[in-house]
Amino acid sequence: MKKFLAAAILVLFSSSAALAQSASQSEQAKVFINDIGNKIIKTADDKKSSVEQRKNKIIAIIDGAIDTDWIARFVLGKNYKNTSDENKARFSKLYRDFMINTYGPKFQNYNGRKFDVTDVSEQNSFYIVKAEFLPRDSNTPIDIAFRVKERSGKLMILDFIAEGVSLIETQRSEFNSAISQKGMEKFLEDLEVRIKNLKSQK
Image (tube, rainbow, N blue to C red; front, top):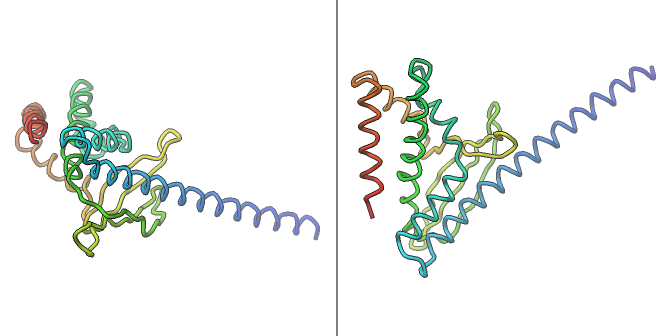
């Protein structure tokens, strides 16, 4: 009987500890995304900085929060295994530039009133963190969700989800279609051109 009670207590304690750890990680994910969102709002609203300075600061915030290496491998899908190590490294570098220069500037003129995390849910080994941007000139919030996971002891963003559409799923489909039609070399050349155009935009 004592052994049974001891085992039951151990199971209960282990379950409680696991729930506490999960709750703690969930809260960390909430704080992580809330911090990033509010940093972006603060930077975008900094009228003392030029448009170019705000753009670069927001790019730096996003660059430090996303795991571009993991996303690059996911986006390439089956082509990641089939391409050379040289092209893997080339794509990873290009994709990082593509990501931060595509999505960083979108926030540079964002006139935000506030940013709030509205929900955090666990999905397999990820956390889905839902949030709202509220513009100053509107009471209609802009909904966005982030797929977050701990990578090497640090929380990182692995995906952006807007209106139920996954960014990395969309890009995976787009990029792999382009690779199938043009081949890896031409795809990488075209991606370089797209990035140069993005960087030249004000």
